[in-house]
Image 1 (tube, helix red, strand yellow):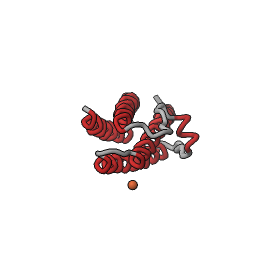
Image 2 (cartoon, protein in one colour):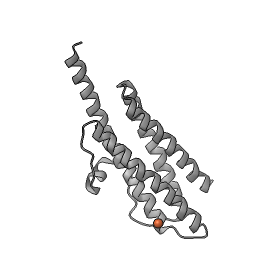
Image 3 (cartoon, protein in one colour):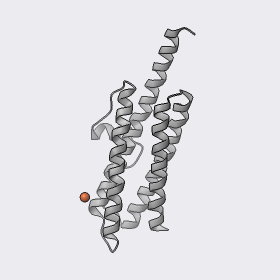
Image 4 (tube, helix red, strand yellow):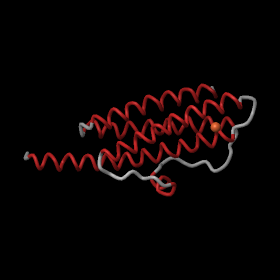
Length: 157
Ligand SMILES: [Fe+2]
């Protein structure tokens, strides 16, 4: 294989992974916004602790959003950055209302579990493409989402 062929194969992989990451960015952003919705709107006897737990979680997601977008840029693709674009790209469902507290916890748990599956799916591809930086980012995201899912699940069990 010539250097030019290796180079274009690498570019092709980078493009595909960047495209997968645009979906992952949208999912993370939607979950960030939903967590902030619940931080603002949660009520009830556990208000204070849930209000604070959701704040920690959306702050963590906000940092992740930035890292994912910057990884997309490093792969030479454009990072999507509008609500309409995110809605089109994400496979998570928005929450327009204010569900009961238990449903908030259930929804977030499910969304974090879904994102873990999505991240694992992209991870298989980034490992195959020997894209170590994306692989590293995804492993970190899987660890964080699994931990958050555990915390949320523990509030309802
Ligand atoms: Fe706040």
